[in-house]
Image (cartoon, rainbow, N blue to C red; front, top):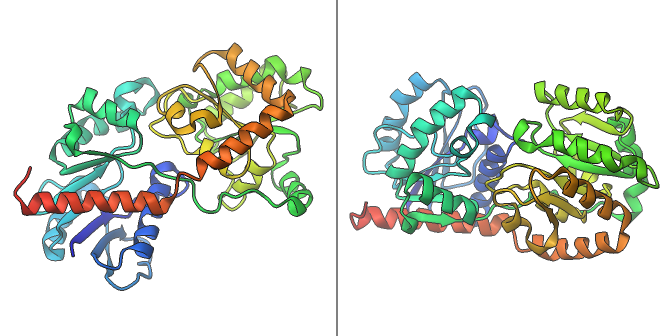
Length: 381
């Protein structure tokens, strides 16, 4: 039996984003599967403590850095933890770990690779804290072989302490049953102004996601499509979302491009399921869950070849060169006009996404905890 601590606060702070969903699913699945070890989790001090099963307990912890620094070290000693896991890239690693071994999940090194696409304040903190956390960690979990290579190449992390553990789509991502499609289509039209047929992007609306290229590429082919298709770009609107809307209007695409804003998790499976295809033109991903979410909903996928996306999508998606607007246009035109290709990708996607599960993810991370605890016992470092 080992005593495991997890900073679970990102599951509340960032739910709906990659790191927030990752932390939430990890905690949920460890509760289901692990009946042996003891768990202590940190929880935001401005939220009610969660109801937890036996062998689990939660401690409220403030978000303010100055308060946190004074409290986490004593908490680690009080809980007598063998392992402490930071799922958020190793950020907020305590200065004093005592005898506790550190496990960090580093999802990607985008602030090193594409600093121009990262807020300056976040980049400064990331570049300062993450290399130090990776060096101190007994195990570094990451989400793809591409990210593992980046960790070794950029940060010099020893390959022997890196564990690649793929995340997975949440269980809610399933195809809409055929009998419910008409009703669901009507609901999407009322709630979001989305009408079939449409191509779909789901994810962050930031420059790194390459949405300007997506709009340009769609503009080159949308008037050729019969029946007429729209492009739906779903995500939290901000400054870049306004710029995407302005670009669409400048290109005469206002009636062809829909930006419904952030669609809640409960409606995303329907949005994916009714799309003709999903498109993901990102300039870099450490993993990239939306293509797998689309596959889990029975939707064919077109994505760029950036970062880990070819590794994640495999032969189950149509892959085009990142930054090539013509290739992106041609890929969308092929998928829009070729039902046989769409059906083939749907079948491949169903088989491919079945290889990913959160039960397997949690089991892989639990193995990393065991390795870290064993390293502590044998005096490794």
